[in-house]
Length: 252
Image 1 (cartoon, helix red, strand yellow):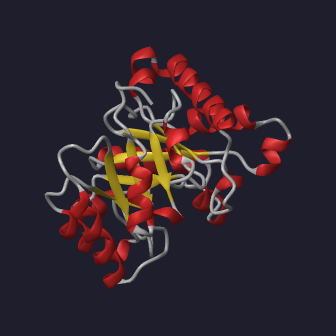
Image 2: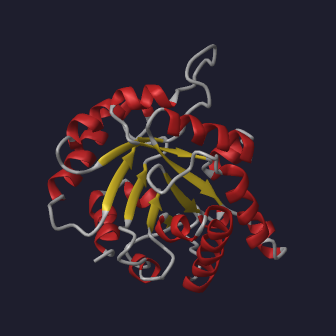
């Protein structure tokens, strides 16, 4: 990361947490925030906890995001949540295109692009996720896959102010396996170069690109010190305040 891009540490709680759990975790983290922190933080709890977490972290400087949104503003979409609903609850961010959505729900780059555009229209920052599978990496297609996902998942409305990219190698999510610093930096640098070609040097130089994939207190400092890694999208390690905070403090 560079001084020009303030690190972002995002916690994706996934389908974890009842009200008591969410309030305790959010309250603990809110109590640790102060004016001298070297990072931005966003918590993405399950939908059932969003309003509770928003209230708990109010005035702490911690932002709250959704884990997904629909591409439409409203309508006959049973079980879905729109970006406007998230905004109405107090969210400022939303994750779109997480590999678990792409895999479990068959989401395509086109689907992700529509969701990101909806997020922008609702006034949310979209955290757009991309990443290759183990088979694709073994086939030597990592850069091809991630570049294609990047270009096809970003809507024309994407700007530095409303979009964050998250590179999450699928083979490293929840597995305990993490990309080596060289592997992570190679992909992040290639994505930034692709952004420069598609959106211009100014956008590429200022847009934050996070790493997601088993980042933890043991490897965070080394990863976050890399030139093109601007924070982390943290899954399992975001469910324990001490662990998540240790990752965040690795930005110092």
